[in-house]
Length: 263
Image (cartoon, rainbow, N blue to C red; front, top):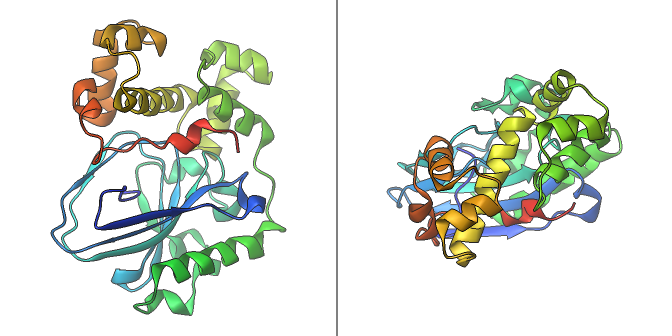
């Protein structure tokens, strides 16, 4: 479970320090009571680190998701977290992203003990916890390897309005398709083909909720699907819903629009 989205009892996003922008998309805070409505979480190509303040303050790394999930808050939720840009977590966590895909792992188990903080176990203000979390990332920024520039370029291309084919992306990067896939699994957690599907899903949900292109068939073609049936199959496989359900789910289903912007 990577995040609760806006519409929970309390949800807020905070922009990172500009020096973290090549790595971090957003910090976010979520607070909800036990028994709050379930949240439908879409895959987005990102790795998150969550500080579960209501659960003792354990830092948890949540890997890239390959399909949607439902989160049912059976206990009170109080989370402070960072959402890394695709490929942005590895320089900090120092583990291949593919080892985290579809998993939630205590950061201690990854050797990321630098994420420990005495304030995590207190019933403190989640906004203050985000400030502390950003401070920990800033402390390590100077010592981190840069985000792989070729992977970063390829990710930005796949989240663009006219994403390239994987063959074209391979030519653009100068890497073979096999090497491109290996680098993506290492830095992002999924291969470029899977990330391209996730990026297209995210943009499709955003367009549907904005009412862009009222005809589903036309929208499907504009986004690179073969036809409307292809879009529907992809939605069912990745999001466990239909395009129409996503279109009418504004307020409970949230695409990550910030991923479409350059870092």
